[in-house]
Image 1 (cartoon, one colour):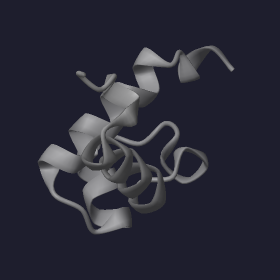
Image 2 (tube, rainbow, N blue to C red):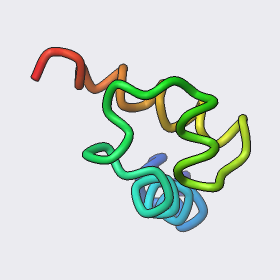
Image 3 (cartoon, rainbow, N blue to C red):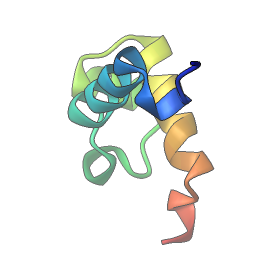
Image 4 (cartoon, helix red, strand yellow):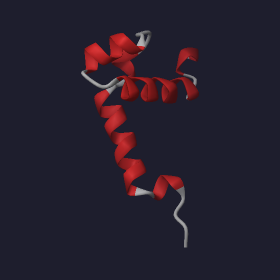
Length: 61
């Protein structure tokens, strides 16, 4: 039986890490470079988490 994406422990861990390391309430309105510096994360992590927040429509709140 194939797992759904959200049932995958690695996916869950990545989601948790993203929210923990790059919290939305701290990085709102920041550029990728600012997120990298403020949260001490890689470009890839900052870009990925920012794209996830944008997919959620965070710019609309």
